[in-house]
Amino acid sequence: MGLPWTERGWRARLRRVTPAIACLLAVGCCGLRRASAPSGPHFSVLTYNVNNWALASAAETLTAIRAAGADIVCLQETNPSWERLFRAEFREAYPHMGFRHARGAGGLGVMSRWPVEDVEHIPPTVGWFPAWLLRAETPLGQVQFLDVHLRPAMNDRGHVGVGPYFSTRAVRRKEIEALFAHARPRLPTVVLGDLNEGDLSPAVRWLRGKGLVNALREFDRTTSTWHHRSGLLRIAWRLDHILYSKELHCVGARVIRAGGSDHYPVLATFQGAQGG
Image 1 (cartoon, rainbow, N blue to C red):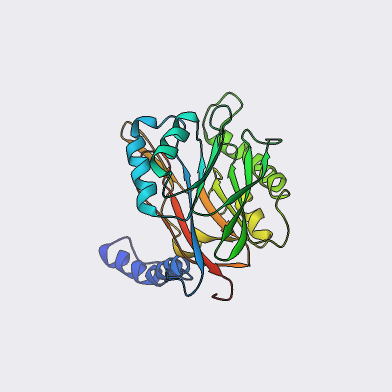
Image 2 (spheres, helix red, strand yellow):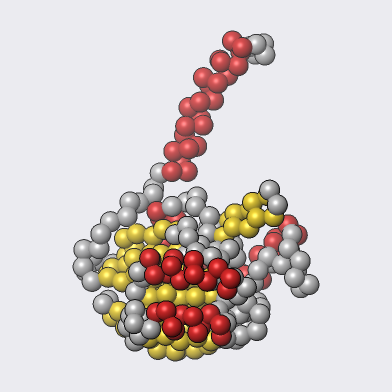
């Protein structure tokens, strides 16, 4: 017979469950790496959904990108107005820029310190938005970047809810599989952007099954990359990701809690897999 529900009983039960709680917390926190300084040639990359409708907060977005100081910046939800702002603001910092505009939230952009080749602008066949396969010259040699914006958790009428979130998970899984097929095998690869799903989602798990590593999850497993406020209710989730292939080694990744978008930028730094 168990102890009665008295103060003494509660304390006894707490002593029994405390080790289990500590174990669970340890499992959740163990395995995290600490960011370190690169030990050889390296580059940094930023992914940022700037929000097609957030031009009123453009100054905050420009400040966040400038402060991040990434070598390569991959953008989602750009449009001609964003392009004009970026070209005016960053023409010296990023002499190599490109933008691909699309309807709605399908615009993509890249800004780089080094030459970038437009390999393929991939039209949507499963989801709503195109993707962009790019190849950049970096201190580590050629690296390909797949800039993606997967199907949002909405139904076909644009309504958000629990039902659409689960019903569109399979769509995003098929979408990333179709897009990744365009990447060149055996070339160092970074898949990044707004995947509209969390760390353990089907789309991210599929990429991990292909040997890619989720950079942010190595260093941080809790910070949200997207936030939305409705009255007193604030919703936050991890929707933005940077995943990389085995030819690269990530020495640090973090969320930059700044900018004027409903998304935060995510920054990662890479060196060669052998440290050089």
